[in-house]
Length: 232
Ligand SMILES: *Cc1c(COP(=O)(O)O)cnc(C)c1O
Image (cartoon, rainbow, N blue to C red; front, side):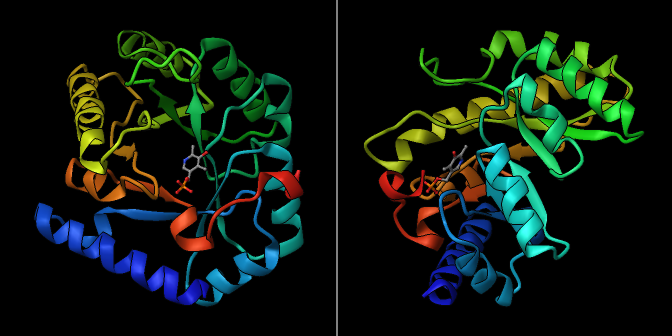
């Protein structure tokens, strides 16, 4: 089942790239495996999938330890400062940096291990109150402050679009994130890259690709619906 799902998602990714006149290799498909068992991750691995997304530190670490193959684990969920030490050397990219204090904690733990931790700044483009992420206005100042941290490297921006009725309605948020990245890129802040745009999930990844996503985070369309009741 995972194989068929992955093939169907891959086809949709390719079609969206084609529509946008983009090359398929500009877009990384991250299979979001949160709440899903290692057996399903292995099925996806057997199809050649190497990028996986988890939203909880503990779950990411546990699965990585169990699988032990050189996959790319993306931390896509909110990160608490006291969990940084567990994940800083395990995630290939932290998508959810949304405060200076969090970035400073990543700096501290990355420096201890003598590594440079790649991160994205999470932006709350929809302005929903309950959501994590900085406001679009706060993004540039945060990027500037992270640029001063030698062991943290900004690679781009991430957003979770607010729930909308039609996928097409999410497009304005993706466009806004792309334009924000363009604005920040123009500042040419030393050490800062604005290459990656992590945006688009099962319901809206095609519009995201058409608006410039370089990473799409797809869970449900690959692994099926999540049952939070029994996996916690
Ligand atoms: C769960 C999650 C996804 C994947 O969501 P689907 O709708 O299942 O594709 C993507 N991004 C983040 C931040 C998530 O927490």
